[in-house]
Length: 420
Image (cartoon, rainbow, N blue to C red; front, top):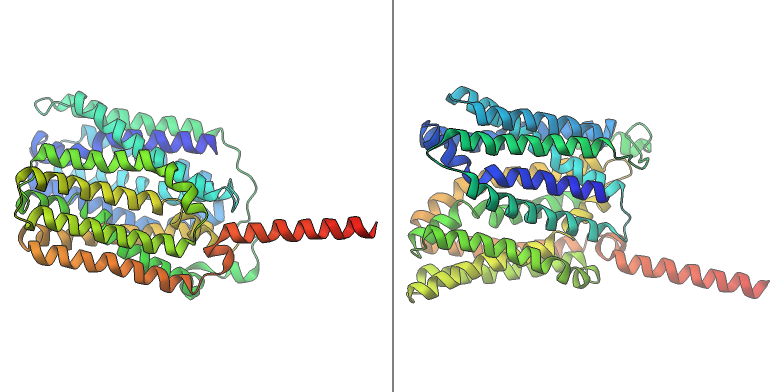
């Protein structure tokens, strides 16, 4: 588990070097224009949507480690190619490789965490993963910002080379991991083996969680770098430096709050924690509404906008130890890879649709934009409470199930002792 977390931090560190500067690199440094730069972002999403349906079956049949190693090599080739590409065709091809590799990493790493954890330790394991992801992205972006120079193509080539090196270093680290033996599709019961997508779609709780996940990712992550930033600039007059401060506040809250809220989350129903996140994000959208529509001073607008991102970070820190373990607990034996890939596919769909819808609204329809996503946040709470009615005790309250097992075990031991 420690090696998995180290590898996860390395991959996030590598991504942090390039993600914030990808648009500038393609559009300005390579001189390929805004259209090509926008197409690169679209290619990332399309590549993920193409490979994820196959990734789940591969993880189930072959195990997560071989799939992860193949994804890392693919991503490394894509990153290095992107740093050397000089034409639109080569840039888009490299972006497709990098996007496909990145997309497959997520469910593969998640399945490895599931295989190396128990119900008792899974929430903390996924919280640690999320913490290290954000820390790695933040540190990588900070260092990359000091290395990059928009007047020199070579400085960007160095960034992409570092990213590729991080992926290859992760290959070396992961190659030393010996995974515990987990059931594969051929060893699972017949009901699970027939599973595939048909069985997954027959799992009503998983379908409801997927719908809930789409709404969450659409209303939050799908707006960070598109609609919400456009709204901040156009409606609230937020400067680019203040926008950077807001993004830093989001990361800072996650890093500081993640383990502080973990103890609270571990003793609460998962469905109610997710419902609470919807309410927190509703407050965040109201705060954003004040920033752009409240007619206060520029300082107050900036403070409110930064607070919006901070509130989103608080909600994210509550979700990380809740949603991913729930996906794992809903999966039948041997099917965790399929379920993780399906949920990653839902996330990619939301991240593809979110900017397309939120970007134009945030830039031009300020009032309707805030109202729309305020309602989406409230919908998260409603959907979460409805999901809770379909979850078993183990799925919604794993801590209560563990307590019952301990109690029964103690009672049995006492009975045996009395009989003796």
